[in-house]
Image 1 (cartoon, rainbow, N blue to C red):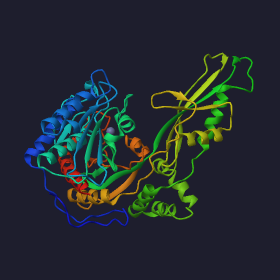
Image 2 (image 1 turned 90 degrees about the vertical axis):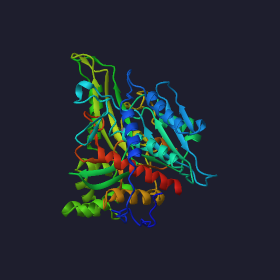
Image 3 (image 1 turned 30 degrees about the horizontal axis):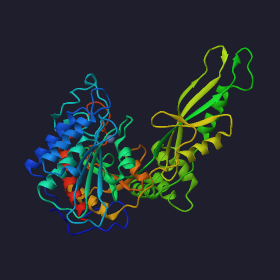
Image 4 (image 1 turned 120 degrees about the vertical axis):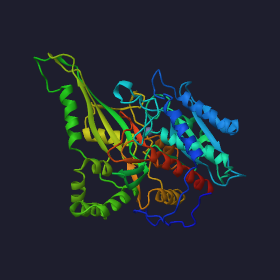
Length: 479
Ligand SMILES: [Zn+2]
């Protein structure tokens, strides 16, 4: 069993460098099995389309677990829709565990891909020039395959963890009405309840010309919310304009939004991020990063950093107008004017809080500010639930993660980050379960092809991820 005696104490997560250790590679047979699973998953179309079926993918994995000797009561295929069945596999601890399980959360669905857009067939697993090509090679059938292979291999080797390990392969992360992660945590909490979640749908190792430069661990993320603004007016003949006008009413509100900036705010994760980054930057930018960390922070530094969109998104909740529609005829006063405002909300704040801030900003009781749900329903108030707040960086997660990462990519700093997007982690975070996003997939900075054409992953990155998850799952099972 792989286990390094030297534990690294994390007084801070700042550019942790673990002692170098060697990590045994999977055997040829173990690698061949992982690659076979990867190929099988890529070649099952799990898009949210008439041709796609998540169930076909989860059933294929269910068969592998049952064939390997997992007990049927530990292999659950379930979901609210026949084409969107989730698979939840429980790897039982030896004896009675004292700690709650660890959950690996992996979505099985992929974004649609058209043969005509691609160089290869997106639903064919093609190895070419040191890469695996196919829809899902980056997002995220690589991790699905690595974790299925890990569970099978540990089982074959007779590994007995001290706590249960759970693997959930889920539907509708990329879209669709039957989000498996949300449904499981709301309807079958007993099956997926865990001390914490490892979600390989985020984070990973950034390569720069083949050199690993940083390993990002997603520790928190912003929450996505759409709001619909509606101005209504009786309208009338355009030859007789009046002061009241739905378009002017709406644009007055949008002008206020354009000029508004949500308050500057740091959390544990973004604070560490800027502290780490300041050490790698130089000049005014490095000074500014340090100056926003002081109490009180330098408002001039906040101002300068906020000019850069990526930093701005890290420092503030953002809301921006993304769609507009108004009027019904060239010669009529508009009766309706509508806009969509898309917000990315910092951890610790709820969509309803932001909706109320927008209402206060517009100061126009006649202008309706409604929430648009992920299913597209427009409702009068928004959810009260807060965005995933940054969990404490658990040493029992970060120590092995850092050590194993260092064994595979020596010297690479492990840094927690906040995603400006959103993953299924949010449903578990809202249920009070801390989530950490890490794919262990090494990808060139300029080769992010998730959701895009000719999606691909270096062969070496896949094999390293297989080695990573094997060692990582075993270590987490020991805690
Ligand atoms: Zn994904």
